[in-house]
Image (tube, rainbow, N blue to C red; front, side, top):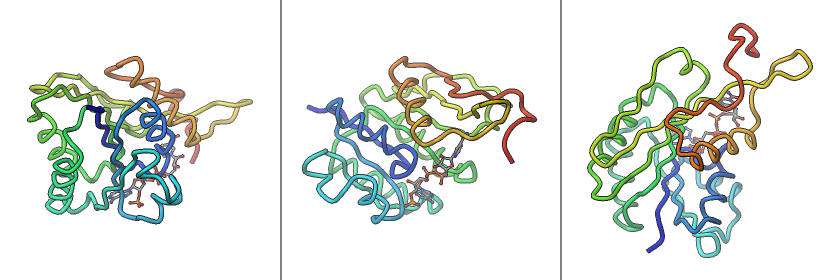
Amino acid sequence: MAKHALIIGGTGMLTHVAEWLSGEGYKVSVAGRTFEKFTAAFGSKQEAERNIAFIQTDYFNTVAFSGRIQEAIRERGSVNLCICWMRSDAEESFEWLKSWLAKSDNPVQLYEVKGSHASREGFKSEPINNLKWNRVILGIRMEKGRSRWLTDKEISEGVMNAVKKGKELYITGDVEPWDQRPG
Ligand SMILES: NC(=O)c1ccc[n+]([C@@H]2O[C@H](COP(=O)([O-])OP(=O)(O)OC[C@H]3O[C@@H](n4cnc5c(N)ncnc54)[C@H](OP(=O)(O)O)[C@@H]3O)[C@@H](O)[C@H]2O)c1
């Protein structure tokens, strides 16, 4: 049976990650609020041809989010890999997701994608039952003495590298010099 990857916030900068995982033989489910963003990202023949399905949900409503994710997983099978790009103020839904994935009967890899501020806090990856919690931090790029944020392609490549290497903590781009971050 194909492995199942769940990507929260998978219709924006992580589109390339969803396509890569689909190409690697995963069933992929991407969650977001807007179906139009999903079709813009993956085209209209996505489900049959690419095995990428959409879960329409808003992670700022934890009750609805948890119900919708569980329903989708019942339909598509248990999750082996979860990539999660959520706003930091959606902590309630993130905590629910983490504890729910940890109850899985099979091993689950979770990659939490965070902005550069996460580099200022400590992170210790400890397994929670069957769940391995990893983190990818998005930095900046210095070019010709000027800084810029990463492009969507660079972000997706960073996340793919983290998954390929199985890194607990992976920083893509630079997080220093801190005061050089673009405004
Ligand atoms: N360090 C860096 O270089 C860095 C860091 C962060 C961002 N960026 C850049 O900034 C750009 C914008 O970032 P962005 O956060 O808008 O990322 P994005 O990946 O373009 O969009 C956010 C994703 O999350 C979904 N989403 C947003 N709010 C949601 C909610 N409440 N519930 C469920 N899903 C939700 C969106 O779909 P829906 O809107 O349909 O829900 C979409 O799939 C990115 O394209 C990236 O290039 C750079």
